[in-house]
Length: 242
Ligand SMILES: Nc1ncnc2c1ncn2[C@@H]1O[C@H](COP(=O)(O)OP(=O)(O)O)[C@@H](O)[C@H]1O
Ligand SMILES: [Mg+2]
Image (cartoon, rainbow, N blue to C red; front, side):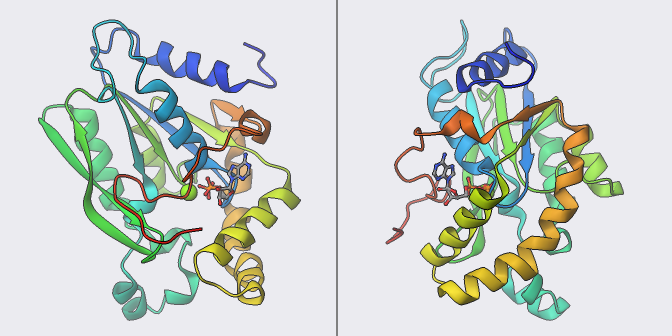
């Protein structure tokens, strides 16, 4: 594998190699700035890996996708805390809840662990939307803040076997982020302002964390290969997107 520019096939091979015989559950984190393509990459990896398990592991069930975005605080809570206008910032997530879930996944002693999803049409977390069965030997988890240098996020990072960092040309990232906000209901002006005023400072916090990553993933790994329904809420049905 080329250290400087891994391909998608390299990523698949590296993830499979981490799991080996599957005796130990592997937690692989993917991070990067908002809009860098974390959710898209992980969903594509899951879809590619699921039908092709290492020997002795259960097809489909052996790999799971657990998004940090499931730990968004509910809007009602954000209102109460005066954080509604900063939704998506570090302090608008239940980092302790995410850590507790990762600990349960790491303990690997329950028949099933349920994880919350983030429902993009509602823009709200949805408890119990994702079932992680005991057979899940590779858990892919992704979000903005996995490598942030704060006590609770450092505890998150300590739960993970590796963390990969998605990079993307800044103009492309900003265009995709605006387009995603528009697709999920913001008017173009409001979307651009949100990307500048809310997502912008979040990206500034995340960008320098790249130096702590085990692997840097270039945006080109997914060029021309975005699956249909890439923004589909994980593990739940979806209504009317696109
Ligand atoms: N290779 C790609 N080509 C075109 N659009 C993409 C590609 N990868 C991701 N996207 C789109 O860009 C937006 C941001 O990607 P997403 O995976 O949601 O980023 P993140 O999870 O890092 O915030 C989404 O709307 C997604 O569908
Ligand atoms: Mg995402």
